[in-house]
Image (cartoon, rainbow, N blue to C red; front, side, top):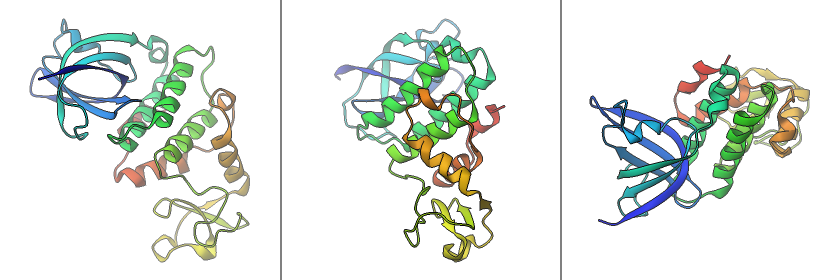
Length: 242
């Protein structure tokens, strides 16, 4: 069977048996690829380097175009960026883990260079920036990932009536963002209120380059809840956030 090389970011791992691991790799060229790494959990295995957020050049055996649930077999691996810096503090590792889990969940086998580029840029900043990020960085990152993943949060227009936000507004995870209270769907009647200034800041952060969002304030909770509503389960990496 043919071999080929993947250049991508490890966005997820799942242990199999006593020694093996399934690794999910996000690439710009092929989207999300699932790889079986035999004996990766052995301390001296060459595949032990396949850790979350690491950028790798991975040689695999398997035909391109397979579904994300279909497995390729890892043949060899080269670490392109180990991202040691983002592992030094929970304030960096937490956002990195949330970003990887989110991007991996939103990705498909259809290439999406914007989704890949957004995650790569965020991980570079988390790895190399001198200071820890403010909450606005993660909020900006999640709004961008959701947008590039095809589920853009409603921040500057009510999804029901299409009009700009005005008091009072409420946040509906199921509905996909901020609604006028009188526009809420019946199953979201008890949705929490959201401040207009917070909405405006989230909409602004979606437009900002990632570096410019590094020190920005923002509420992150609505973005996290929106991601979890889309996934249908809690983010495992949320526990890593300080």
